[in-house]
Length: 595
Image 1 (tube, rainbow, N blue to C red):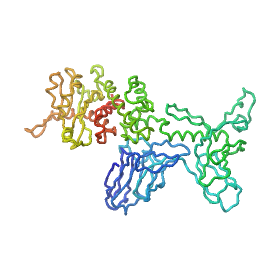
Image 2: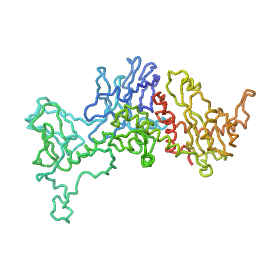
Image 3: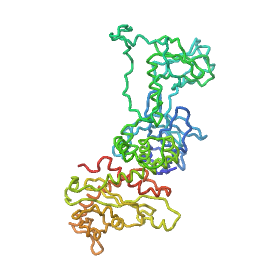
Image 4: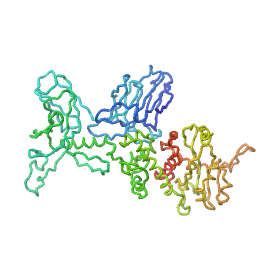
């Protein structure tokens, strides 16, 4: 679990955990005294509620805790979680709360958009919708996507020969149960779901005349009433099929399941139509065929079923960018490149585009191996092997693609118009890694600046804000000067007359003088005077305005969640490849500078 802690006072508090998709609001008077609240994020696959058929977990699993929650006013606390489900008719989103007995119960739930809870200054960047629930205690919470369940109550006060009811959201579907099949209990449960039974028209199948122009079928092939053309639904736009899309049965029937012992007959009929003569059996019930409006409702259920299968879901550009930071065109372009067809590593049952998508999701969102294995339906070993193969391939491919361009050809952005000779801006950054048991190795990677073991990289951007160079991985103890002087590939791209801008720690004038490269760094006060002169302060301010853009580029690199956690020792051999690929993928996002 990953814990987050914050102090909540009597005045109220809005707690936004952007990286986990959690929004918690404590209204005033929710606590009487300041309390330290803990929000723990469970690892994927752990702490999840038990799922039944036709249920899917579509959010992170969080757990709220407090040292003393006796005087908390839970009615003044709102919890909202982002979810990845695409809601469709016949399905619902429910926030579940774990009870004291390790069971889970449904909370009163409402669906909201980020704009309903957050203002534009909150820093919330996710476009995924949220589900808000009314909690009753501090416990564990998750959002479930499932088929709607409808409960009907039989009238016991009046004598009736059969029980009839209509299904909400489906006006063309009704349920009819004869008296002989009615249960003795007043309540029973029925669920609408897809049935594997496939509809096959026969000679006894009939189509209602209301679907023909004029209310009657014409035998003249040239007449407009020769073919049915009047329906209550519009034909949707057919989505692009992928290699992993499931083949769906377009003519499935709606099956009505009861949770009581089996009965003699359950009939489903459309409104205003007579019952067809042919019946079909599904499980222990006989399902009567229906006309086109029923068939259309079933097609929509079949569509809903495909939405719950992650392999067959077609992601929009907004969701794809949220999960990978890339547009779909970039994924397709990379996949079509012939170099990627020669990807090394083991063969996989996933197509190339899904392998690339899986790697991009792990870089951007930071999913673990068990999580990705569950989502893509492959083993953890396959995920690890595919990730290693792809990250090495992208490492070499993107390095060739994002080389330093010629200064005369590319020009520069307007933000650097006051620096006519500026060609490149450099800075160093560090990412955490776990400590090793080897004292010698730990000494090499320990950073006094971060007080932690780190990997250090040199990052360079050109005068357009594009990342054009990333050094190899160095230990955290290495100085900026040594990394720059040892980056022969970077120095080779510089020409006489170029201007390089860096921070005060880059004492590299001697190394660059041999190449005829001008080094621009802020002025240093030194020990012999109290402050900088006026012209030195103005010059340092101008340099800081330009250097902020390389820090913005580094911040975009750090937005890849795989770099937000310490790199485990099992992945230390891939640290350089992971950071370099994340850096060059920034070039495929929106430009840092407006041209």
